[in-house]
Length: 314
Image 1 (cartoon, helix red, strand yellow):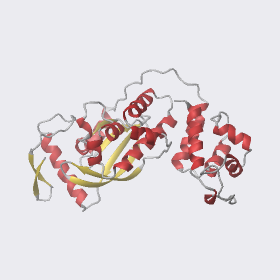
Image 2 (spheres, rainbow, N blue to C red):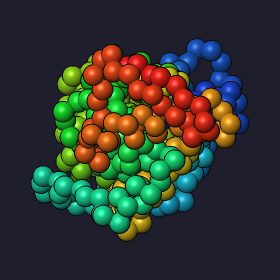
Image 3 (tube, one colour):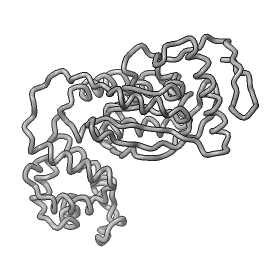
């Protein structure tokens, strides 16, 4: 990734989205040649000269102080993720690009897998910054069974969203949000580690095969993915409204554990219990951590743990 180009396009895109009405600047009339702020207006808000800001927007941020970056973040009204992205890009310009080499295969330590397996009531998985799912517990495999249909390993959320649109649009209730989030997470990771060959290869693959991805990638949006809600439609148990939490694995830089839960007493909790029962039924015959697939027309008698049962047909 060309870091200077990333800086230029990121600053330009953030400047273009802000109008004078959103700032403390006086209104300069309607005959404006740009939809957002002018360079001189950003410079005024940041307290720097126009020439200096112009140099920054051209991608020359090597040696810029943190106080200036903070002033830019305030002037451009950056949120937490965007501010962190700006600082990451500035940091990358001070680093000598390493030689491109094939990335080492990331592995999930056995003790981490045991933690996943001990979480029997919550879908959980370990993911890297490229959105590869590197390990999961049984319920995590079951929740993302549609993603494991692809023979490509490890399964990748962005590939699923953009290269398997039929399954993805059925699985994600709000596919547009899922698509925007996936791109924004990858863009944030690209700023954090712009020399990750695995990430650049993935972005190249998606850009080549998906115009929808290319359009979103060009927007330069970034976001953090720490906690939130997911609205999913599972092919076996139906709609699920789940809350996720992100837990960074400090001993394994770049790896993060995600866990999903449902509101107690909700229909989603009942569906999650049914999914756990479905998982247990399948794993009587399948390997403990293999991808889950069910022949069409298969029927299962599922028990919810409270004395009730239900037959599901796939």
